[in-house]
Each structure stands twice: as structure tokens, then as C-alpha cells.
Image (tube, rainbow, N blue to C red):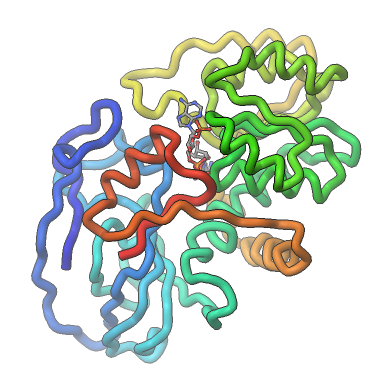
Length: 330
Ligand code: NDP
């Protein structure tokens, strides 16, 4: 098996110095075990953000879609596919009840029938899809006619949230880092877009939302979050999903100045970890599938070819190279 290990604490954007590729021999299977071969690996911002919780020498964290190629388990037969947080590895021996911890969950068989790409089980029909669905609907509680702002709007979660907001009859403003990304999310139905690298976000947002913002789905934190929150209406709701603008920085995030707006406008702000909704996960999958079939939910991926390029793919999402969900095809 090829395996990336966390070799040196991250500083800034991860490089091959921090994540080292090694080869590992795998033993033969024991009863109850199966061998899974990675097909697609997910590339997610949390891989950078969770660095303080990782230990040097551990397998780099992450989930993948893998094909079962050998098995001594009747529950996990050869030819089936699993989604699992095996980490950054090409081959994994697992079993029906592997030890689970903060980074490793039990493998789940997926109902792959060839109708959608396998990689979708890492995105729109997987973790980012559930994040968009529950993180937006349960926390922002959008009402028809309300104004919704999404940052990180051309990414996996953000592009999905914006489309759900349109399905719910909201006016949607997306903030993203390039003109091409802004153009793409307009084709998804976003009413307005702001390129935060080129435009004055506060001014552009005032123009796009002259009556203020009711819901903010925050993927980025930092200055963008403060700017949006400063323009929210009374009783507005904020879903604190991610804070990628600070993931490459050391120490505590910079002090934010949005608290006065939370108080004076009586805003509700809630952070979440998507696994909170594990017991109703299928609700997200069912609705996301339905919206895709109805043509209301479009999905894009940025696919990096080759397991050896995992580090580059991770660096890419931190630089903003991806549009839609970032995955690596082995
Ligand atoms: P994305 O597909 O959105 O990829 C990351 C994007 O972030 C980049 O493409 C880039 O787009 C943007 N970005 C990078 N640096 C900055 C910066 N300094 N300021 C603003 N934007 C930046 O990733 P995901 O959709 O997978 O994740 C989006 C967010 O959701 C992340 O913060 C992630 O941690 C969080 N998340 C949280 C979960 C939870 O359970 N709470 C679950 C899943 C994701 P651009 O070109 O626009 O800058």
C-alpha cells in the first residue's frame, strides 16, 4: 500500500515535507477482514484545520471510496464499494467493527449502481452534501423571500447551499474568489455574486442586498464574515460551517469585531459538525438525489489524477484552485 503520513507539523500551506509518502506491506486477511482499494479520495479543508489534533507519524486523515478486492467477511463482499475514513492510503485492511476514534469511522457500504459517478459519495451524496443540507436548513431556517449570503460559494458546500437556498425561494448572494467562479455560480441560479479578491465586499453587498441579509452561511470566517454579519437584519441566522481563511495561520484566530452586531440585531449564530446529523443522514441523501434528478441541483468536481498528487490537491483547495468538490482519482 502507498500511504501518506503526517511527518512534520504544518506551517502555512502543506507540502511534501509535511506529508511523506511511504510504502507499506499488508499482511494476509484474517477471518472477518476485507481489503479495500481506494478509487477516489476526498480532499477537504478540515484536513488542514485538524492539524493540532494529529500526531506525527500517523496516517494522514481523510475519507475515500474504495472497492473491496479481497474479503473474508460476509458483510463486506468482493466487488462492493465502501466509503470510509481510512485516511490517505491506496489499500486498507479493515473489518466489520474497526476501532473508531475522532478520525476513523466504521466503513459503510454504498448503494453504487453506476447511475452517478462513484466520487459523488464523497460530495453531493456524501459528507459535503449533508453539510450543505443540514447546516443550512437546520441552522439558517430559511424562509421564502429572505436574502441569503453564502461565502466559499463556488466550493463543494457553498455551491450546494446556494442551490438549496434557491429551491427554498430565497434571494441568494454568493461570495467567491475568481470571476470564473462567480460566472459559474450564476449559472446555478445565484442572484448576485461578489468576487472578494477584486471587489469591496461591504459596498457590493449593500448594493446586492439593500434591505439587509437574513441568513449567512459562513464557510470562510475572518473579514468576510464580519462584513456580512455587519449587514444582517434583526433576528438573522448564521450557520458557522467553516473558517478556511484562518486555517493556515498559527495560534488563535484574529479577534473578530462582529459581536456587537450579534447583540444589537439579536442574531442567532450556531456552529456545527456535520456528524451531529448522522442518525438522519439519509434524509439529506434522499433530497439531494431528488433535486439532482429534478435538475435543481447541479454538481461540479475538480479531479486531480493520481494518488501521489494528494498533497498538491490539498494545497490547491487552500489556494482556491478548485471549483466544486475536490477529489483525487487514484
Ligand atoms: P471548498 O470546496 O469550498 O474549497 C475551499 C475553498 O475555500 C477554496 O476553493 C477557496 O475558494 C476558498 N478559500 C480558500 N482560502 C480562502 C480565504 N482565505 N478566504 C476565503 N475563501 C477562501 O471546500 P468545502 O466545500 O469542502 O468546505 C467549505 C468550508 O466548510 C470549509 O471551511 C470547511 O472546513 C467547512 N466544512 C465544515 C464542515 C462541518 O461539519 N462544520 C463539514 C464540511 C466542510 P475561493 O477561490 O472562493 O477563495
